[in-house]
Structures are given as structure tokens and as C-alpha cells.
Image (cartoon, rainbow over all chains, first blue to last red; front, side, top):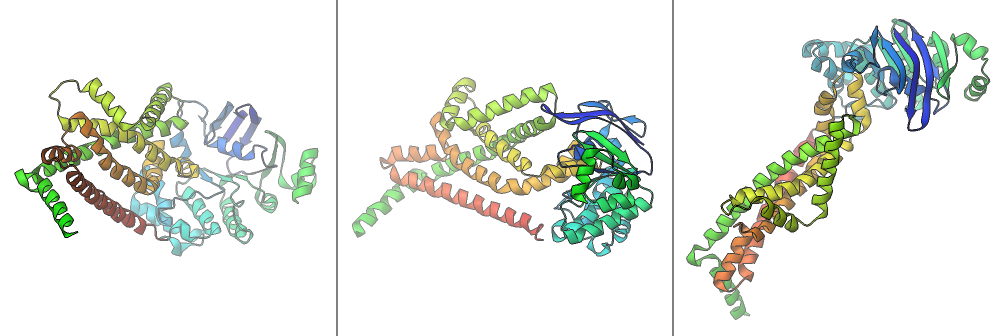
Length: 240
Length: 236
């Protein structure tokens, strides 16, 4: 579903991504871990071209994203993204946050979008917050709504950029629960996170990105119990 | 004491009533208001254009935008770094050399070009004050750059911009008084004209000051009203 070939990104003379080649299949749940500054967030942000790669190519659904002719806006409609800092629209109600894009892009009428928003709010356990403004809600609630906002576009893949890193500890669980349910429903997911428990439980494959390359990848049991790369061994000994 | 009050009263009477002098102030006021109005409009048009160029130049890689950005930066630097009276003298003698040009146009163009630079910076700063995450969130949903600007960034920026923009318009109304140096019969010029008739310059200028004060107070009130109205929508 997503294919990256020799993906490279440099900021000035700093090499962040040094050639990443990955196949992400439909239905896969890929969890990306690594030390801070390793390039894992940059890799994720390249997947929907929020960050423009300086080399290599990305193919999503048969469309070459790195081709300058590609209509990225149209492609991004099918790729949901959830950010570390939620990035909800503060001057819009929760329902407006969810319905804005589908209505503006003429995917749904306002009525259809409202119905969809209510259904999504029920699914994330916040059916009574439709008329609230983001500023009135806790971080965990905001992040769940950010997930609902992305889901309203019926994406084929969901990208999560450290979705629980900005949350108070007691709110991490509620967001992870939503993500687990999403995984069970068969959504293709790429998740950058520090939540090793989530990686073990949900991932179909775990990537360890270090210094701009995928230093190790495996299914979670082997990955966590028999790491081969010395830097991964070192990293895991610190975080587990 | 009483004598002095009486003479002051007489001076003001002389500066206002005989020869229907109040009509002079009124025609000057009319000129000042018209020039301010058109200058504000020119200032907004220039300001928005320059701000759009400067904001898009941050992300665009088009050569044309980069060139326009350099011109925009130059314009802002020169206008904000030189006195308005000098700009007026240059613009007036450079462009409006024909003796029968409409003074309203002369004044409005001079003040509008000046104001545009300040308006541009206010708008640019207002847009820059919105976190980048808002643009990224809009784009990640598949909205175009223009859609995200229109529905997400600008409505938030506008609220931040409004107070500064109001101040800019208020100072613009006051600044139009400078164009009296180029033979435009605005309020300031007419006050001077009355003074030259009565041989007593203080009262007409005090009257002019009072009229300017009433105008700026009125505008301040109006701005306060709008700000309060905007604030109502985000009481949460």
C-alpha cells in the first residue's frame, strides 16, 4: 500500500533520513521506535509529504507522491494523520472540526457529515462533546477527537506522530484504547511512539530507526526479546 | 481673569463664526475624511497583497514569488524607515506634476502607500502568530493551501490582527494632516488658512485639534465595539 524506496531527507547539511526502503502492506500495523532525533517522525511526515523528501521515492496506492505532477491534496484525503499536539481548530466546535474537511472537499453534505461526526464521537466515547470547543477539553479528549477528525475522511491508512507524547500519564490509556480498536477493525496504521506496550500488543511489525536508517525490523516478539542490533539492545535496556 | 477669559472667548469666536469660517473647517474635515477613507482602502489593498506575497514566499519555491518578496521587503523597509513628509514630497513631485490633479487622489495615494507597509506587517505578523500545526492539520486532511488559509488560518489571525489594525487606521487619520504641505485643503490646512485671516493662529489650531480628537475617539470606540463582538465568540 505504501512503498518507499531509498527515502532521503536533509535539512541543510544535516542528514536526517539516509535511505529508507520499506513496504507497508494493507492492514499492517507498523510501529516505529527510536531515540529522539533519529528521524522517525521525519520518516512518518514524509509518508504524506508534509515533509518533502530530498531523495528517493514514495508510492502510495500506485501513485508516485514524489512526482511533482501528483495532486498531493487529493492523495492526502486518503491518508489520515494524528499529531503529537492534536492541532484541533480552536475556533470551531468539535463537530465542526470533524465535518470541516469532508464538507469542504464535497465528500459529504453537511447533514451526512454531521451524522458521521455523531457516530464517530459515539465510537470514541465522547457523544456529548459535539458542541464543545477544543479548549474546554482535556488533552486525551482532544487527541481522541483528532483521531475522529482524521477518520471522517475515510482514510485508507492512518499515520500517528507520537500521539500520546504530549499527554498526562492518566490520559495515555484512553487514546491507546481507541488506537487498538482501530487496529482491530483492520485499519492500516503507521505509528511513531514511545509506548512499548502498545508496540508489543498491536504491531504486526516494529521498526527501529536510528541515525536515519532502519537499523532493525521484526515482528514484536522477536524484536523485543531477541534484539540483534547493539544500539537497539542499548535503547531497549533504557526504555523497558 | 475675567478679562482674559473674555479675550480668549472672543478669539475663538473670531476663529469660528465671522465670514462663515466654520464652513472652512467643515470643508477641511470633509477632505480629511475622504482622504482617510480612500487611504485606508488603498492601504488595505496594498497591505493584503504584500502580506500574501511575504507569507507565501515562506513556503513557495516559485522564482516569481521570491522576486516579489524581495520587492515587498524593500518597499516595507523604505516606507517604514523614512518620514512620511519626505515620502509625500517625493511622490507628489514625481507623479502628480500636473497642476490640476484631484487633491483627494494625491492625498489618498500618498497616505495609502505609506499605510500599506504598516498594514502588510500587521497582517503578516498576525498570520505568522498562528502555530504551523494548524496549517499542517488542514493540509493533512487534504485541504489545499488556499482552503486552509481561508477557513482555518485567516479567521484565527484576524482576531489577533484587529486591535493593531484599528490603531493603524487611527494613526492614519491623524497622519493625513501632513499632506497639508502639498496644497491639499484638509482640516489642518484650513485651520492655518483661518489663522492667516484672523492674525491669531492658536484658536483655529485648537479647534482643529478638537476635531481630530473627536474623530480618533470615535474610531477607538468603534474598534472597541468590534473587538468585544469578536471576543464573544471565543468565551470558552
